[in-house]
Structure formats: structure tokens, C-alpha cells
Image (tube, rainbow, N blue to C red; front, top):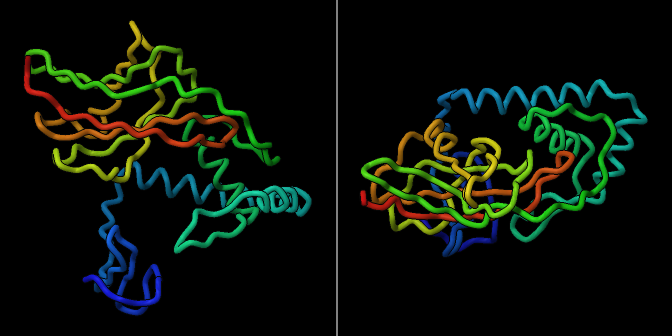
Length: 222
């Protein structure tokens, strides 16, 4: 239910409060569903491995991560944020490197210069019932352009849902990168009339650039 209260967020006792598009909301706390999907298990294993590896670093190495982390901020929540800790920065960088199949690092990397993002938009076609998802991609995306997506949504959805990593952008052909197999391998073939959201960004040394988001409706067969 919507409430009038001092801005807050998170669990308190038997209730959970969060900030929605039109104000502050509160509901009863329920234990979140935990299906233990392979993706969830991999993410948890990844985070646990990063935390364990950080604890194994010597004091000088941890101090270096702490110093570098002071230059970075957490995501803003209720209008406030703070510097990352060394552990948070180490986990942030190395979790992304593990996700991309790269070697982890023990020395904090410097801020990168991101290249221009190659994908420029999402196009969905339906040719005689064969649905294809392609990213308009006039330039080579390189090895580390990350693609995220979510399960098909109702046509009226406009606010971007949570999108999960589904792979890296394949090399384009005739100006388009075909991500059909990446998408259907995770979410199956989307139904006609549903809306598909796709995000893309670039990874450099464990840092991620800003994500660009596109959506498109699955058309009827032509």
C-alpha cells in the first residue's frame, strides 16, 4: 500500500518499504522465492569466490584496493551514496571478469576509456513464423560487448524490467548482429505481441560502461 512517511527503504521488522514511481510503498515481508537456478548458483559462487580471494590478499594489496575504492561511489539510494570499500571494489571488478571468462586481478585497475558502443538498436522479425532478434550493429562490437535481456513482457510495459546477462554480442553480418540463439537459449522463443527488452554495454578491465536499452514488439508473421 502507498504511505506518507519519512523516505526509507528496505526491511524493518515484518514489513518492507520501497520507493515506487508515485511515492513510498509498504507491504508485509515474505521470504523471497529461491528457485536456485543455474544462473543464481553461478552468481552466488562467483561472489563467494571473490570474497574468499580478497581475504587471502596481503595487507598491502587490500590497502591498495581500499585506496582505489575511495574514488568510487555506491549507487544512490534515497538520494545518498558513499565510497565503496576495498572488498566491494574487488568483488565488483572480479565478478565481471569471471562472468566474461577472464582472469581475475589482484591489483586495482585504473579507470578505462570506453570505446563507442557498436549495437545501435533492436529489430525483431517474424518470417513465416520464424522469429529472429537482431541488433543493428554497423561496427564490430569486439569481444567484450555485453548483452542482457529479460523474459518477454506484456506489450504495454515501458519501464525496463531487470535484465540478466545472456552473452556477448556476436560479430555482425550485413550490419546486424543476430542474438536470437542467445535470447531463446535463456528465455525461449517470444510470443507474437510480447515486448522484448535488450541492453548492451562494454566491459573494459572489469569496469562496465553505461547500459543502453532497447525494446521491440514481436510482430505477426509476414
